[in-house]
Image 1 (cartoon, rainbow, N blue to C red):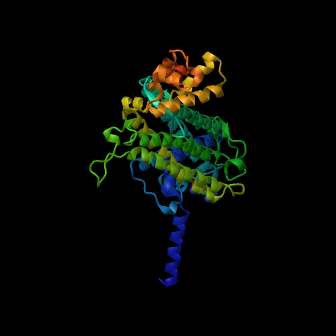
Image 2: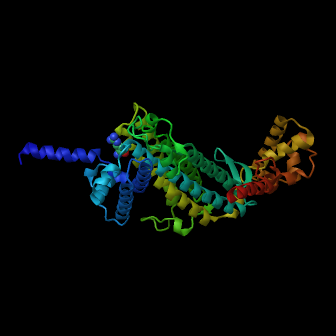
Image 3: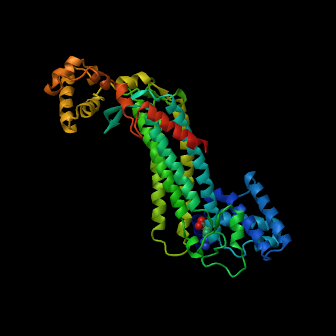
Length: 460
Ligand code: ARG
């Protein structure tokens, strides 16, 4: 072969590889075959395919599916994408009838249908995983409605709360995530198939029939919009990103809590890792990875937004770039939820360390101010400054405000020199936590009510 011929062949091969998506969109083989079976059945109903051709197509497609699932199917770059790969194998198996399958459709509506079926499946399965995760948080929370932990703002000790209440904050986040996947599923449950290339088709098709067969509510309204719309993919990427952000936040707390300085929790041995150089170490690699993987999920979201932003109507090959990021984000969140679920179930909680930590930082200081407001009708700002004096005294005695004697409290400011003995009860840390009974507050009673709300929701 002449040199320039070799170069031409090499370039052609490179181009095929560049153009092809089959090596990653083969992930959609089941959706592709399901969509094609529905399409062929509709074509038969409409008198466009004969009964015999349709039966051959359907049986042939099932055989292709079997070949793929048993690993017999050979994916080749020449097939370009999963749609061509399936169709050409079908034609090899059944002959002429295989060539009739693509009547009244285009790969543009075909890929939109396959991908939407995939995303819709994942909306449901991730939603189910999230519910399980919420359940785990609620179960652990139930055991800790009286376990004190410093509630923080600015990562500084603020007010005593119970650990169950802290965990339920995450249950709320994951419940909202659940709802996001649910509403995305509802919003996107419309069938692209039959939009054809961009403008519909002159064939007498019935889009309502394929839509129903594939489990959608009804067909999409505009063919032009449909073949270029990837909002459903962006939505799942956003929903995954938000859920991963929540996973990352609890992971961050787990990393902090398992540090020597905190020692609030310990990862169970299966979920802690060792260092190759420092034999004494136990590292929180698992929550660190959960936190780290959040970054790539955000990347996938931004990446698809960027692909979509300049596209003129209608289909453009740019959208072939929509799939890998979605597959990656889906796999990442699936494993992340499963792993986090186990981490939370198996973590070892150091109740004593948490309770002791509450004795640092005058966590019940606000309770003194609130007491003065409630019992002595004092303006809050006045009460605030008096409390500050009590805190100053406690500091000088190297004590927490909850450890002061009545005499010490009385001596710290003129205005409270006769304060009733009952103040000691108010400064008690558990009492402080239990005083917060406003709706959504931390008291054990309120926490238990919150758990009841979750349990009702979980039963549905
Ligand atoms: N592999 C393509 C994709 O993923 C399928 C659609 C191709 N359509 C076309 N007209 N080239 O987007």
